[in-house]
Length: 250
Image (cartoon, rainbow, N blue to C red):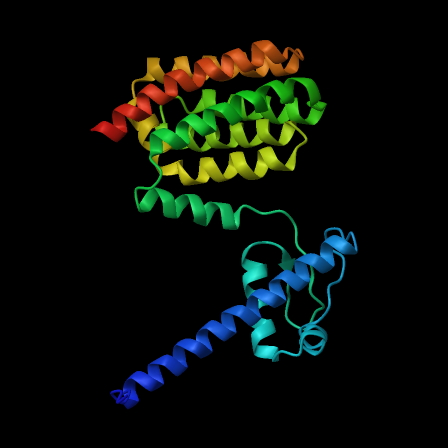
């Protein structure tokens, strides 16, 4: 049976596609190999990983493929690579999650309202844990941030900066890296909206009310009263969410 010959340009396109798919497959093999190596050897942050040359020799792939895979792993925080140094197991970061959530916001797959609901749940639990686990230095830091908020009641932009720092400190006081990473990522993604919400309450009296809520949260955390801390944080977010929803709908 006669078949039409494939045009040269189509043949080249197919070859390029096959090459790209092969590279992706090989890169995935490298990624899986490194992750499996970390798990099976129970490696911890900062410990050495095989070099690009070593992994290439083990898997029989080019150094370029390994370098490509290592770049992906570095971007996701799985490993750290510095020029001229041995790759190491990476520290937990929010880079991959931040990109994921930002993409969702930009493309409309996630709404600011949905992200606010998620952040509220996390921040309420963070306040409860902070009340249970806080250290003297955490309370000292919260008190200092609270004082800075009070001093900037007539400066909404500066007030917003201290507000963000306040919630970072609460997350740190939980003693959990997850609350710092996840909570911090949500705050970063919503930072523009937070500023807009603060600006919408530019009246001194309204910012004073917001300050009072933060002060009540600090009192509960310092007094080691988890239920009270959670309740005040939930109240704070109910008020903040209404203000921000007004910004989103305008």
